[in-house]
Length: 291
Image 1 (cartoon, helix red, strand yellow):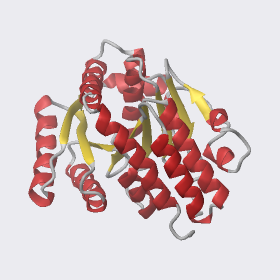
Image 2 (cartoon, one colour; image 1 turned 180 degrees about the vertical axis):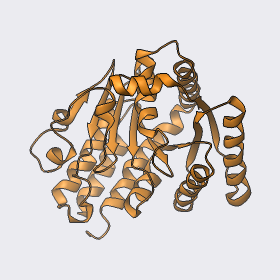
Image 3 (cartoon, helix red, strand yellow; image 1 turned 90 degrees about the vertical axis):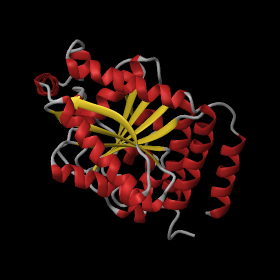
Image 4 (cartoon, one colour; image 1 turned 135 degrees about the vertical axis):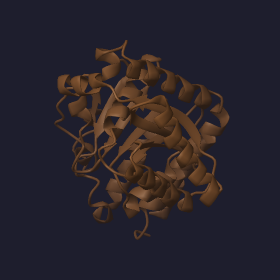
């Protein structure tokens, strides 16, 4: 097992060119609009001519494909068991956007065979070489293995609402991840705000709490307003940035994504090193208890 992991590690270090950035989208609790944000955010990135793949990691409750009116026949399970190639479990969205359903194949991680482990690493290697952004839509809350995965990705986008419980849960999530990796970059945003001031106050509270208690600076992406077009778009199963491009929330999403891309594009060299580190960390996580 160690020999195989070492060979893959050397292979990754020898690879040339830019590698895709891995980003996890998380929330401390459910019901804050995380999956809807993920798909609209990914859609905007794709419209900016970025190659994007969304990996639905909300085990047992995945709904990414529903948000865009698609059906999913296969998931990571069929790939991990060797039934299909990774390309066969990837589905097309808008522009250069693609997505993968986690299905239930990730729920028995400790029971994986060595071959399944190797195939997972090979899949992520392929995704990094193929896409500019790999977005992991994580399930709400935290489990031991999901925290390990979150500690491996390059960056984390944390979504909260203005509700006190959502703010506390968002802070707790960042704290858990920070304790595993103090160098992790966090981006925070507030969803479903009734006013601009409400969003600003929420983000300031989160940022100040991270600074005060963990001495950690976080990047503020901004806030998305409460907008009736969101519900209409979900019902129509079309991302709101497509179905209602002139709505305030759509314009705000474009601004938010552009801000994120500008920061990302200014850190190309650091990103390449981080991406290689992403696979290295994943190997360590998924090989626990196997060597």
